[in-house]
Length: 72
Image (cartoon, rainbow, N blue to C red; front, side, top):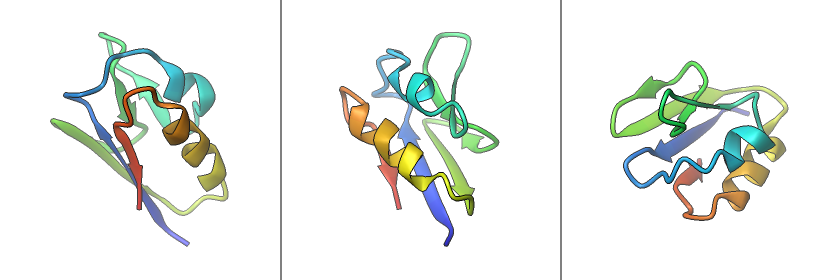
């Protein structure tokens, strides 16, 4: 099943928890702000996946201290 990950980069505090928890879906930019691997990046970074690692992405989203990650 496909799912979409969205990161509100404007509200991201660059703590690194998401890409530390799930480096398969998230990465930091030069400023440490999160973005989705292979996704589009503007004010929001968006990527769509069909892998079996949704639980990892969910764990990263749940760990975000400012709740800027959404899975759909």
